Figure 1 (spheres, rainbow, N blue to C red):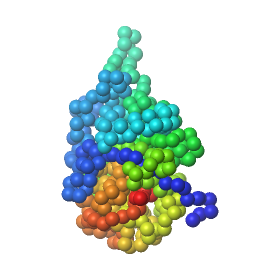
Figure 2: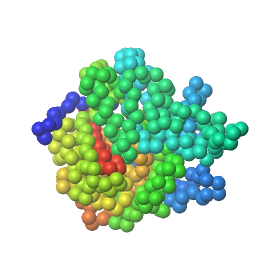
Figure 3: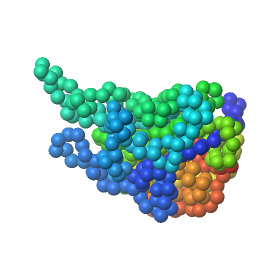
Figure 4: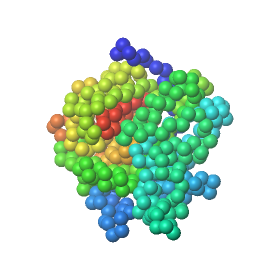
Length: 412
């Protein structure tokens, strides 16, 4: 173990959930993984530019957001991203678990740490597309979108704070695709520092023009469903999702109902390039090594690894190279982005839930859509599902700028 790190006590995970293109809640995710039912479809997300056709690609779109307005008391926060946050909060007992934590500790002792990449910028895009002139000819947002709260990067955190009643430290993390993995780390630090007794962590990101056309401008979007680690992969499929988990000190109450733990984490920033990983995977390796060290396990004790696995040529080959160097060939490692698409700021929480499903059910997903193994990738990369009990699972989330985070979860 590196001299600067020390093993930390695990945090109990009292509740967890995800809502993706596969459906709402944990059961929908598990059923889709088990039956290899993917959620990607050809892009039908409307653009804000009149007459412009949707981008030629595949997306992981959550059904029903357009038909699910926020409750009247939360109407000031109305936008597509906050609607998805609200839908996710209603699944798998998350709202009840937060209310219980508030009852036991007090609202100011329950922290909120949520991740996103674009927050509710989709509403801002719409507001600019519908600018209206006043009597002097000056352009303004239309009245239904003239709500400053939804046009800030902190829109998600502020909304979840009002929706749940938690009044502890409230942070919105925006480190691109590692955002909602790093929320676990920030929450652990808040609890370890005595600034909170429990923390609701999560992430929500929804599709919008900035996401679709921005990633396409970087030449990272495939016109076909993504194929992580396939020899013929040619880019990612974008998706949207929301998810949450409630963390507490393991010793705070009877652990009889909390068999899942956050055991360790590792963060790094290799600062190599804005959108490309370090060519030797330096940052990815440091994050995984530190997460194992804090969890107090060695690489051979890991049973499942959910890879970042975006299906871009560079990311997958470098991540696989590091995994091959760190882990034994028996490890089952896979990317689940073929099921959901790359959900960006929500990927960390969604794929952490997949790792927790592996611990709960012994369901180890393979890599959907991929069939031709890339010879540059090691034996740890699995395309087929497997079933077996595992005690520890890791999730990797790597963001732009070499902003890396690895999490180790365990089962008591």
